[in-house]
Each structure stands twice: as C-alpha cells, then as structure tokens.
Image (cartoon, rainbow, N blue to C red; front, top):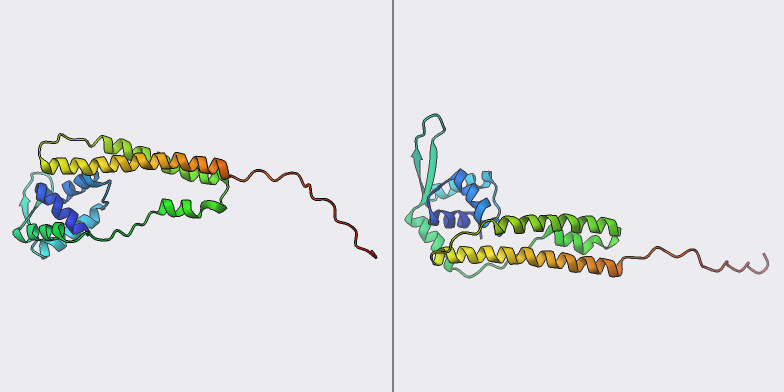
Length: 191
C-alpha cells in the first residue's frame, strides 16, 4: 500500500482539504497508517498531476483559500484497481520488538523502563482508539468500525504480551552473584 491509496480511499468517502485529510488520518486510520502533513500535500500534488483528483478552490474572507480535493473517474479507477489487486506481502518493521529481541544484555531496570514506556504508549493508543467509535449505519461504516476494533484488539493484545514479558523478566533475571565462594587456589609445587 502506498499513501496515495489511503488518500484516494479517504477522498472516496468525502471531498477533503489537505488539512482535513491530515485530521482524518489522525482521527480514523492512525491505528494502521501514518502520514504527516507534508507527505499528504506532496502526494496530493502527485495525484493531481496524474489526474486522479480534482481540486476546487474555495475563496475565504480573511483566510487563505481552501483547496478541497475529490476523486476523478481515474482516481476511482485507481482505488478500485488497488482494492481488487492481490494483497501485498507485509514487511513488518517494529522498532520496539527489535529492542525487546536484543535487550538481553541490559539490566533488569533498563528492560523494565522499555516495557514501562511501551505499556504507556499502548494504553494511550487504546484510549484514543476507543474514543473513535462512531455509529454504524451501513456496510462502509461497519467495515471502518471493524478496522477500529482490530486496532483495539491489537492494543489489548500488546498490553497482555507486556504483562507476560514482565513475568519472563521476573523468572529469568539474573540473581545477584553469591559471595565469592571459590576455594582458594592451591599453592603451586616448588613455589
């Protein structure tokens, strides 16, 4: 998936300005797709150049003109082509999981700090996702709600995993080394 497909999908729901697209990303798809505002504007420019979107300029008094983007037939065709194409293989990059994988050389306190930070992030994500609930009136809104539910389930699963990992840490943390109990070495013969 490319950002252009997410933008085309958002514009298939309703025409939006670049600013509104950014707010829509944060408020509806952030649990599975991230884009910053500059990426959105660059992609809108490319979509316009490709003829996938059209832009209507709305004059505003005392404010900059508002540019509202909507799909063209070519844009709808590209969205349809992407939606019906074979699923892309997901190539996952999870920096937190990479840290957990390599954290064995850290102290228990350092590992706990990493887990604490991730737990805080997962709780914040869960709270923000639960706040996104909207009425389900039709199939499109039911499918959007289903993706939101997956985000909630993923966040809950991550919190469960963090607790399980804390148990692993408890069971496998090295104990303090015992007092030196090695017997003194025997003096060498002839010394």
